[in-house]
Image (cartoon, rainbow, N blue to C red; front, side, top):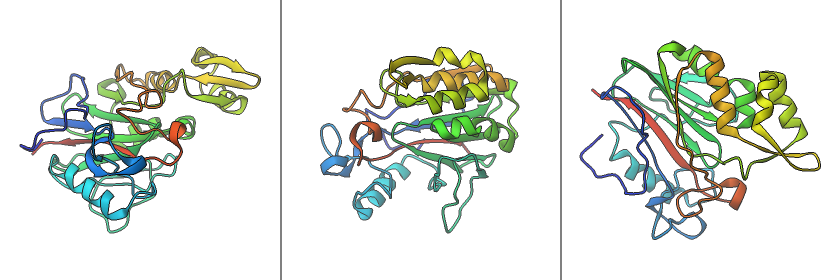
Length: 254
């Protein structure tokens, strides 16, 4: 990272990666957003251009983040899909939900506010990737697609699942549960707890771990933080509706 000190609330993943791999995740603090996008004790670090916040303010927040990075993040136009692209400099953000790179100094980035940020690296630190995994992307296979497109070998890959909506707050219908069962078989049933008629509480991080393990990823670390229950630290779309976006970023140092 650069010499600029990270905000105390921002998260550095606790995983055993090569020293040349760096990653961080912002929280709702540390920026200049106000009103519903504000932080817990000051300016909010809203990084989402489509969140309803003032565009100039979001740009200022992105500048603040960039001070801690070797280059401007390769932002994506996320659509809850499974497309994966190589992170580079582009004039228009591509519609995709994951990116990868082998180039030192290039920053993979995703935005979240309840969906899972999942970061990847190989044990040698030669390639990294980042995926945006809500339930639609997870069912569709975005994590598997990221492994394939990036060229990461699952048995040689480390994955970090960042803060996301937790199992006590993520209510879904029968259709979502059935979609996961169709994809993952009976094993996924343990990730759903009956909540009301036709409703279930889903453990999204556990579903991600099952998908990664089924792909052959052996080392998976989860932050175990729930965005919906911790309104001091995190933005949450399910909780607040109109809200900000946090970023999870990963890169290889020069």
